[in-house]
Length: 281
Figure 1 (tube, rainbow, N blue to C red):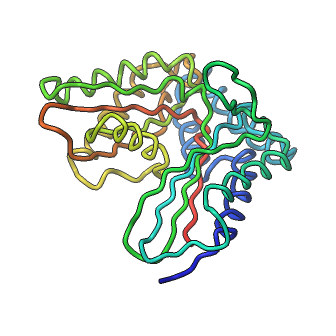
Figure 2 (cartoon, rainbow, N blue to C red):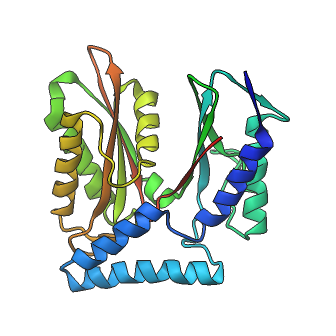
Figure 3 (cartoon, rainbow, N blue to C red):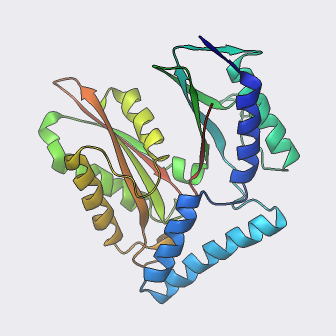
């Protein structure tokens, strides 16, 4: 049994949350630069150039990349042979959120009651924490700061087996159409197929964290990711939905077995920033 101090994990979270507000993840930065070089539409190329320039200003002046600094989502893979010590993991991660958003002067966007009062918590907490037990004696923490311009464009669709692959494609492309003028394109698309309603949604959210350039390990799904990516970028919506070749930076699919009567599908839309980070302890 290995002991891991939760304060070490929280310190990493605090550090990364500060960085994510001001700079693109490396895979996003690389993808945007490649898109800029290959974009054929003059207006779209100009927009991509502005997005890249925006990061330079944000980094140099410690100004957030976007005014929506997001709601924090943590994915924690906890080894079964790990004993977390010196605190409650949820409490220390929430404190890391509070400290980072206060010290970096980031916008605090979380409301306590979701329906009636909608009063701001004034510290951007609580975060959302998903915990998965895995074999071993290590801990992996993935961090996402999710803005809601893109989150509001996400969908869960309960298809039937008869809908099949064409039904899946149709629902995904319809989601892209709805999101195009609203989700701060070019988008990141995370897709969850299978499981139950909530499992599909969780997979779709997690899929947004996949490093651009990595494909699904199964060839059929990797081919579907490629097909969707190419189809979406032929749509012509372009950066910010104003036209061009670059509508999507990545399509990532996660799957899980499902019931004989169902075909759950979730599509989580991420904006061009899609702030994410990962640490292993």
